[in-house]
Image (cartoon, rainbow, N blue to C red; front, side, top):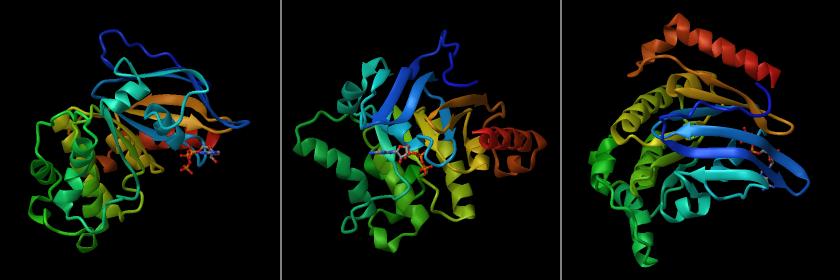
Length: 264
Ligand SMILES: Nc1ncnc2c1ncn2[C@@H]1O[C@H](COP(=O)(O)OP(=O)(O)OP(=O)(O)O)[C@@H](O)[C@H]1O
């Protein structure tokens, strides 16, 4: 499908609803006519050629860039209202931890900032320490970022993103800089976290196998201007094990997406 798409949304709570949404930077159209609904609790991965607007899509949803056309709603609110209510959180490729603070202190940071600014932060079900346990770092609470591996730092960043109990997690190539084995392990861990927290996840990646392994749906964007090429449902059951990557149906999805990517 080219340009835009309609989704059947009956009976589905909607986390993010985009309607004819476009983004411009000056004369340049970065995203055009994006229409889609992302159901609450769903896991979407986003693929597309370099420069097609994947990061811009996350920035649009998270109130970092305004729509030049159309509208974006997050859980029925404006993106600004959702941002102020801490309904979403970001994880970037670089963990961006404060180097002088321990893992635990980094996870606690959003709560501290909220308190200092007098912002009512949604009280999460889990304490920062419990979140470190959730990402498998319960025994590294006092470690400094320089004492941790890249994968560990990224897990701290995920725990920090979860500390305000966001209903929507926006992840921009969070495992792109990690070696393949660490990436596989974090993919499994992220699926566990997704199952346990029920958070909606929007996950940008350049890796077709990663997009298929994680996602219930893959949003394929195309370039010039950035727009929807297709949404592919990944009809593979959860929990997903690494051995799934050997399965013919997994590889069939990868081939389908590779063909779509070549057309973009
Ligand atoms: N602040 C900005 N000002 C001008 N142009 C921008 C700005 N941010 C992004 N762009 C342009 O918008 C387009 C989409 O950028 P974006 O970073 O969203 O692409 P992407 O698909 O995430 O790319 P990549 O896969 O390389 O990370 C690119 O052509 C980029 O140069």
